[in-house]
Amino acid sequence: MADVSDIKIIPPANDNGSVTGAERMGKLSLTMAWWAVCSAIFYIVVGASLAQSWGAKNALIGMVLSVISYGLINAVISRFAIRTGLSVSQFSHALFGRLGSSLATLIFFSTAIYYAVFEGSVIAFAMHHLFPVLPYAGAALLVVLYSVPLIFGSVQHWLDKFNGILLPFYLLGLLLTVAMSISQYGYNPHWLEFGPANPPANGWWHCFTYYMGVWILMMYTFDYARYGKQDDTRYHAHINFGMPFYSITFLLNGMAGIYLVSSFSQQSGLSETAVVVAILNLLGIWGLLFVWVTQTRINTANFFLATSNMQDFFSRLFQLRCRRIIWACLVGLVVYILMLANVFTYILQALAWQGIFVVAWVGVALGYILSPAPRTLLSHDNSNINPIGLGAWGASVVVGITLMYADVDWQSWSAPLTFITAFTLYRFLPQSRPTLS
Image 1 (cartoon, rainbow, N blue to C red):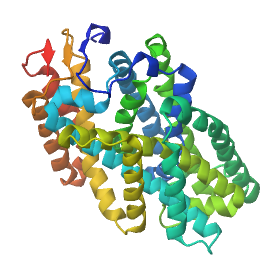
Image 2 (tube, helix red, strand yellow; image 1 turned 45 degrees about the vertical axis):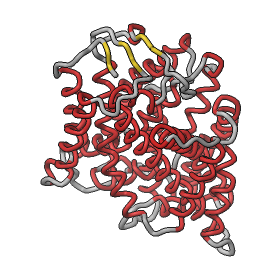
Image 3 (cartoon, rainbow, N blue to C red; image 1 turned 45 degrees about the horizontal axis):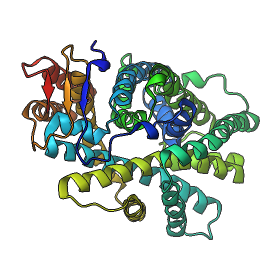
Image 4 (cartoon, one colour; image 1 turned 180 degrees about the vertical axis):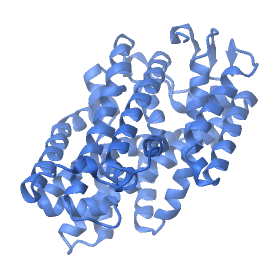
């Protein structure tokens, strides 16, 4: 494996996107800012849904494998981001050229917006459910109105403190929810048997590949890790962005989800709103507080990354430059409109497609980072297209989307083969190694 210290960085001219030494964060501050991502009702629901479809044990195996794979990949990505200080947009510019970078940034900020819509809608639904006098549209407006100002401050001097304060409340809330479930329904000793009576032997594979659909967290990692200090690289690679983080994010939340849903009255289907109703029925106003804490924490990351990447997208592609507060307000407006519109089916389909693009991006990125040859990263190059990088990205996306619509037996291979194709094409096909522009 190549050492990222071999990379020579040529700073981009007139580009304020690179993290300077003064903007680097202490390990605890960056940990508190980043660990906002570990709390979401989404992770609880995913674990329960996978268990319901494929069996609890298969779901747990898929979670453990995901923790390992996410930990290994993000260890590489975080080291590189810390070393270079570049953003996803700047790195993509070097890999794919200006147009390719714009596509990567567009996918990044639109995906972050979609997740902000989902997580914000959960809070609005919970508020409306507990206080019916407050219409959903009004609750959604309140969510956006308090979410946008949260990212006016910098990630270095505000989001770390805000999310650090809320972290214990999220953990206590999760524990209290499980404890109240046991108190009300009694302990369910058969929760590991939750799901089909005869789950398929390969169910663990389907669960594992499902988590590849949220590899957008690799991009999240990149844009957060670049704020880390180089002296803290080992800690961030192994702990902060590594397996301990994903053990909480996927495994702990997933296990809680499986247990809670197996204890609730049986339902024909699962959704975030169904789980929220169950939590509110258990905890009342404290359940609303728990939902608010979990969703607000992760939405600080969603709104922050949507704003910074939207700003970068319009600046690079259209030379449209405005203050970050303007872009934050625009993100809030888009989120609010989508929260009110009945477009969730279309958003889910868009996320499925964009997930393939993201998996392919990760494959190309790792192909470059793990190159054994010395590299010079020309982040200021103005070429529109890098044919090698863009070709590997595009070809692997075609493979992934084709498999998405293939026979059922092949659909679960869509994301893995996308990643393998992207990594292989970029890593091993002949190209000029010393300079990537």
